[in-house]
Image 1 (cartoon, rainbow, N blue to C red):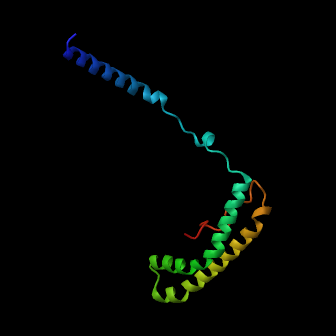
Image 2: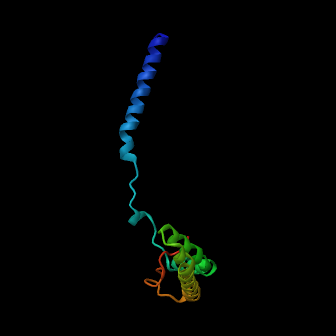
Image 3: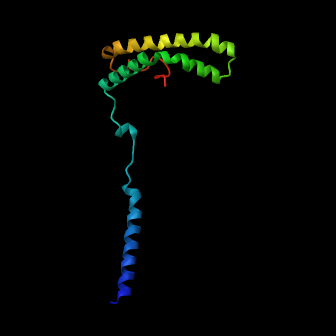
Length: 127
């Protein structure tokens, strides 16, 4: 056999191998079903999530004041509203978020394992 024949045989064999691998690739692809593949969260993970959310709300509750001001500013509220009403709304939301955070921090180990780990406030975190 001369060199050219060997080269063509090698190229054809390589093309056949690649074609075979590409035709089998969809069969080898793994399917993903989140209900089966992702493990369920345990009670400890839910409790720690509640603790983290509570600590975040305690430490960042004050941020409701500028967030409320910014939200009302983007809604196009007048200047008198922004200077008079928005700070009061923000302070009320800050007190609500901070007190909810204190509640979650103290109640996280005593919650019902199935139902009592949902967020009390929406959004769950301030940012």
